[in-house]
Length: 614
Image (cartoon, rainbow, N blue to C red; front, side, top):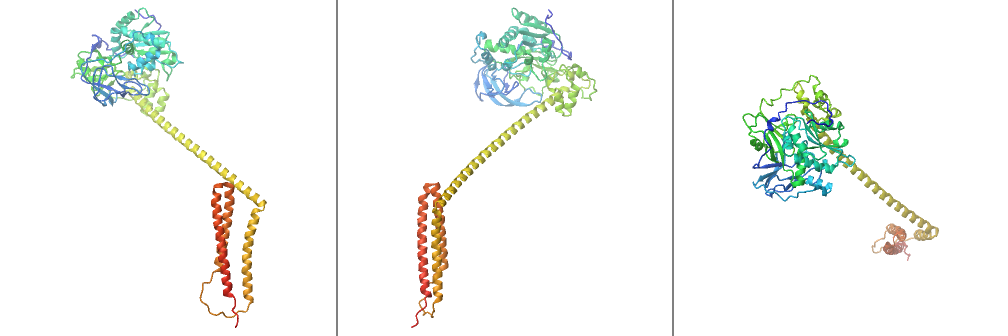
């Protein structure tokens, strides 16, 4: 029955050969338990999980083996019971063939579950509790890049979701995992959709299905009977299954450049994600398996398999009867957006949906790249209404800023431009390269900005400390100046009272008296008639100049000590006694010096006095 829902169209798009009938001839098969499961710690957008188990640990099916302590991410669980064999770098699904941290589990064959906590009526819980269950189950988007589902189901408060869309379009050739899931597990699809609708409270829930899946549409109509969920049958055109394209088809609205569907009140979830949400709530089962399509003419028994996460691609191809003599290329994903596998040792992860074992005639090697002839076909088929030709030029010339200015990041990498290019230019590869370089530059710029912020913060701290130090120095200088001013004022006051003048006058009088006595002695000696003295025993003649110098030094030191005593009395009472003792000591020194000087004078006078003539 044709859909009565109003539909819109998006610009561009292509109609490649579907080749979906290859893998829909038989029901979903259980792939079984391989001899080893390799579980990458990063299987989605966000932060990688961190192991919570050690080598040699025995784990049960569904037990948490890795978790995310910070940032955006979800935990990882054991797909079956067994022993943790190793934790290290192994090949992971990536276009570059890179390795990454993985947990290797050796199954014990018992497939024994850990304790589970199913919820019969989720409506008795709070929304955050249900979101917590979804997070704890390790569910991330299973139809795209793998965005954590619990975060996606909790949009900002200012972005009310009015329309919830379940994406069952599955537009890419060969892939039929969602198609068979809707056919055989429609009840779980609808149950998961209801849980997500209860969390978001949208005004409208709609399931979008391409018109080349009549069996899935019929099954879902029976499953939604009695509900307000809508089934929208959309025309088959690639890439109608793209999130932004499906939203435009079903609502007529366009997601703004650089924005997300929640910006226009819409949210899109995958069919497989809905099944995982249903299993997590009603069965208490985490995300440990998924449906994967194995197709291609080199597979003797192609079909869809229920596969444990971590299952090596080589094991899964064996289940599909891979004919090694016929296979030419192995593609992970669809022929439009997937990439060629360099090794079959990589495992199935949460976002793996298809493996194509293609013969040489089925997917021939692309011809050599030729020069662009500016035909414009790439721009005509671009569903995002970009300018692929200009993006190619800028990407190839490493003019990334110009490419970004032309909305490079709006490209969904659908491959439609490469598909129609008569020059066989792998346009999407250039776009991916440019995006990767821009992300690296952004990360380096962010790192540099943070380093600059830390440097500026340090400089500000040092300047602040210097200012505080200078302020303390000025305060000390001010205090010292005040103390000096106080000392000067006290000295001036003492001078005004006549104390210091009298003391210094007395000292000056003593010096003048000593000098006067010396002068009188010299004059008296020169006035007398002298006779040659009789020889007397030699005795040491005192040095009057040295003694006078010592006396002057002692007197000067006494004056200094007395001045210090005055200062000490004004500033610090604790030093008064010490200075008084020093002054007394110097008094004694002056007295001894004065006595020595007097003795010296007597001796000198006796030596110079003329002898009487007999």
